[in-house]
Length: 613
Image (cartoon, rainbow, N blue to C red; front, side, top):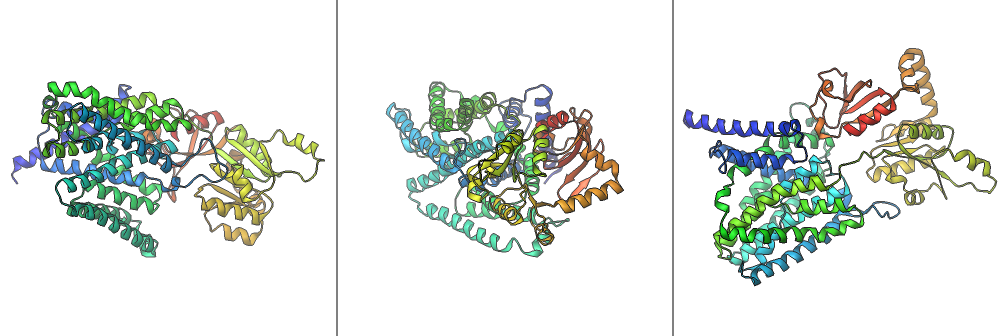
């Protein structure tokens, strides 16, 4: 390789990387945050690429990084699928709860049926010669556009976000498989169908191996330090399935998505997923989106035939998504429902692949192929912006705390939590006689809910296990432990258990729970008053409160403390990161998943939580 070729390669790569770096800064600086970053990256790519100033030359290394960015994006799409949401919510049915997978299948079926109908309409009016391939083009969705928008709005862990993601996955990858099968039938090469099945068989075999060996002690040791065995395993898994898919004659991104599903099924911790996200969204994925714009030649796509057909195609693409997704109106607002439908209408990569196939078989003309591609580009630009305008901004939801057992310890705590903005429900069993009028009057000032008994089924029915934090504070140790184990089996992460028996306390303290005992608490408090009275005063002082604030807003990832404009008089005492903690100073950079120990007035803490979480 000559020095000139090497310089050109680095120059093009440098331009694309700098553009990817500047885009989010400029959006924030000019208050254009309603434009999703991916849309801005595509637009800037159009400006610097073949449709604009030709600042980026064709380069194999840049194309390779762009391809790997797309592959990695498909991998992260698989990782984002939350399989725990596929099972119905426990307890009494709620009008606001539903199974995202079941709803996604209904929407998927509706999109396919409408796409087939529109395919036949286009054939009937003489625009296309073959309705089935046209239906595939209309029904496809661009997972590469939808996922970054959902992540930017922090919706991937919500029911509606999971539903949008699942609909997108089904439409993108099922249509990809249908396209491969269609090509196999048209070319009379049925081996590809068997290869697709073989890829899924390999994925199942790898999953069984992962389940068996991932808990081995040697892997636990290698996860830390410079070895980073988990990261190495992820990239080995991606390349394994990408190469297998390529060898089988299947789309590479299908292999990458299957690798992501396997990682998701392995239930990695959030810190590890954040590492994977940081690498992808920090480097590879922005290169892909900028290069999508760079490689577009808009001048060639504008023809007389395409200008006539474009409005009709746009109408069919949006209607085929908006009508079926109206089923979400049963659980969500009109703005959420319509915004979801508009976002799912984004389409790009598969349209290019499908139109290429259609041209090869003579089903559509060169001009009509250009019209389909241009419509795909337009949906990628229009849909995310309309989604940002339509979909309501997330309102800060109060943390729900469910407390079992009304006694001298839990009742005052329930009032304190209410004053500090928590949504509290104190579950207690109904009195056995009718001579408790005085008790009811006394209890009326507490956020109390009387239930027939404190058994699992009853507490499920009354919504205890829907709480964000579950506090099991009854005087019955065995009941508390039983409820804690059941809550843990449902995947609840924040469980506080009261245990007074010293033997049971030592046993539970080794489990995944926060364990408290009045005896141990009193002893610790007395020791604290003797050794560090100022620290205890800070904790129990009623004027200022001590809280833990979780960094969940991607906007503040890698942000330094001194640049936070809303701290006011609040004091950040410690930053907990994984199993360790940091003593904060002005230049300390925050990371997603950090837990801040903060002291300050309740109003100030509430504002911090609303902004950071």
